[in-house]
Image (tube, rainbow, N blue to C red; front, side, top):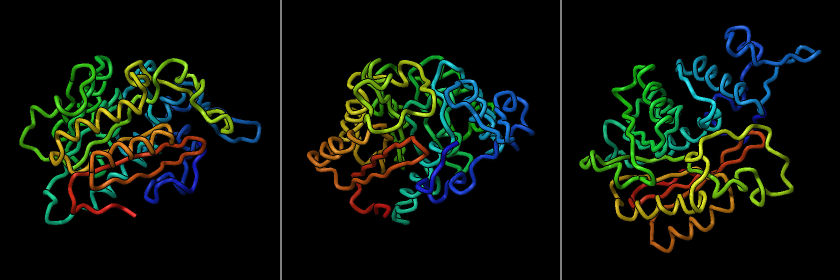
Length: 298
């Protein structure tokens, strides 16, 4: 697993990458996907979805005490990258005015996926409460079972929502709650060609070292991630202070500038962004708030 020093400072994998040899010796389900070289070095084929799933499930179990199940035909998240996002949200929460902080933190995960990884990590690490929305029947079923399997139903509520529902409809049930944040891993691609990397990837960058997994609703949306996040921005313009921070992760750096411009045009007072690094995988995150008194992490 190619990791680098640009990961979040608190990411447990920043200075201590997963020990594949140790994990293979402890977990038979991971051992069958571990490859041993002539020199004895243990590695994983990240282009094999079954191997990626085995690693994700093993890391969640070993390092966080979480047991999950993920279908191969749905998005298989990598743990270090998702952990980067969680830690960045922690930074946003830490910058809140103490007077405005509640006794508990409430978050929303838009499109939680089969793994329900953000709510599971956020609830386990920080005791955060989550509304986790999902449009896909298969993902919804798996997410519910993963929450129940880990006895986190008191912190995480998985909600099935109609197609194209983002924030407005999802918040109707909890109309009195002021949420502290939302997070989202949006569909990155507008069509099949983009999903295959045609005309969407910088030709100077090396090819991705991992397989691209995910169902249609998880990886593709009309207009790609740019239009998807614009829809979240437009929802936020109506909800405004119902959430302290709105945030999204982006797969393309070129999406950042037009989205920041969209926020500027609408007079959103607080905007910040960051980047998540993991080997050859780069992601960017954007956050905005309608609260004038919130501080932005340096």
